[in-house]
Image (cartoon, rainbow, N blue to C red; front, side):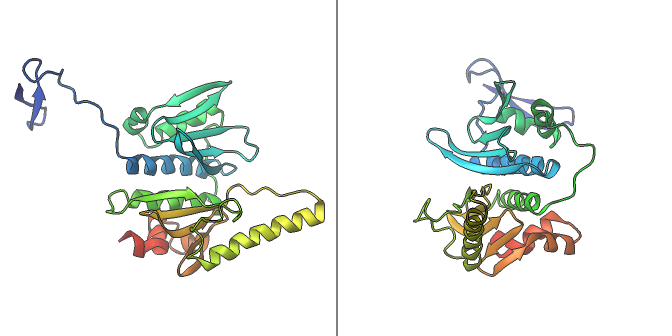
Length: 260
């Protein structure tokens, strides 16, 4: 049975009493839709990179666990990972620590989870925000796009785009963007030149991300600070600086036709 009650503001709301309707007055927990979780993953991950520019973001598909987003350093000596079911996980002294989605989505301050991770992993809370770098801006624009599209009628995703075409010869992500194809070739040429001159290979930290709308690629992001669309390549830092370092306007400027 339901009855009406009032809160301090005088507004009426419905509660469940023990009895005919069952229950204890609390709703059954239903997790937020994936689009909310995806946007939150990218905001937290990109904010960690903004505050600690030596970090990178990678993505992996793991059988049984789905898609993972991982923040790590260049030596892979530390990593923080997220997935849509398990929330956030990271190692501390060999022990896996977990922050659930309930905790992350209930955080009072947007930086509460960020600081919790920084303290627990030893990253530390920066005393001053570092200068924006091209790769940190790249991740922030991806995060901004996903947040802007949370209530869009289309589904949006950010997924790794393979740098080596032989890793996934059928991958369609680069095909609509000639400048992205050239950028991928340039990375391959740089790797070949490194091997020829030093005898050692060169490792790139997953430079390319594809922004998908209903699984169709609308842009390729290069973590060097470039976005590739059907209009060509755009360097993100000049665009960001020219509009007074406003992230929302930068995102709208480079992706506006798709976000409307």
